[in-house]
Image 1: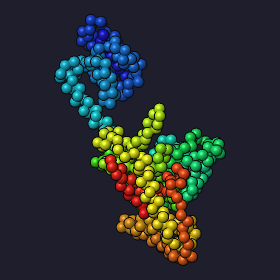
Image 2: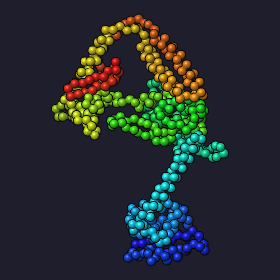
Image 3: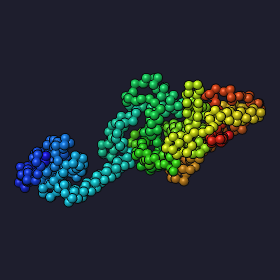
Image 4: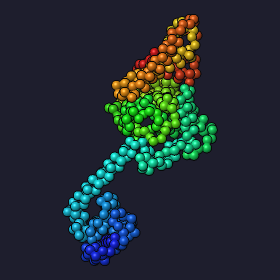
Length: 496
């Protein structure tokens, strides 16, 4: 069946009436099933929100219509974007489109060619609109305006006037105190995401915004710079990671919060397992003040960065070497597969590089996990025996280890500051020099503590083989970086 569609916005002397449009279209109908007439009077062609037009498209989707006939293409739609959208629907249901005035018939090669030309212009209009929207979006964020969307936890959407214009912004609600405490708690050395999540669940908090407390939600919240008092050190943190910036460095003075726009881009190297993140994102300042001190925010985010770098640290239950054993052929992790027989249980090693995409030719190893564990036990026993024979200074070990860790952190911070000097302006140099001076004083004080001498004493010998399963895990994680397993041997890469 054919469909004849006519539309008229208003009655004018020089405009063709709906009845005239229909009379011109009727002779063009060749369907043996006849035709249906759809007409919209008093409706503009700038959009498709018209009663009979929508009814006609519903009939198209039911499969009742095979051709649509109009007097002129602008009777169907004045918007190329709308026409392109509905043309895709017509194609899907094998419906031809005929315009009497333009001699436009998509059932013929020439008609389709004309349509394709129109589609090119429609695509150009789409891309132009898209570019204009992107330009306007980035122009807004340069002016520190909240770009819109759901408010982060602890905030609510609001509006403000900026340069005489009404703009979206954020205001804090009572949840912000919980979020500030999240940063304070997670910055503590002994606090983990899991512990923090359990703490929040146990407190049964009543929040304005519904939230599920878990590792993922907490990590996402803690990474968000909308909470930080964005100063020069936050700027340098994002600069290290390769982010772009909407605002000049001089504006990063700790008076504003910040936010990240754009999607992360993932770039892989030749090896499937070596995926690295390239942000391809922009950081912009906001027209609201930050609520978390930059030092606390950076402490949390440095800690999160280290978490993301940690590989499998031994969560498996079949061997205390989980996370350390790698295939000597391809370098992929080895899995312990357990076969539960009637009389005995067998454990054997399988390369994940073989099971995941058949990257590695090795499927199973002649050497089993018990043999690998035996070799590691013997080697660690030798190291412990040598250590037990040595005399060491009787200094508080815990304090010394903490001092060394703090020293390493300070040296890392100084190194980052020195690297940033080449990009620093006159405004930021005083911040960098001042911070380096403070860190250098702390470093000298710790070095003095580390050089203190104590009385020598012998280490009490322990038997590694007698340790419990979890204790062995902790020891090997401290001593060994990787264990490469071959068909007939193993190669240990030590940390010591």
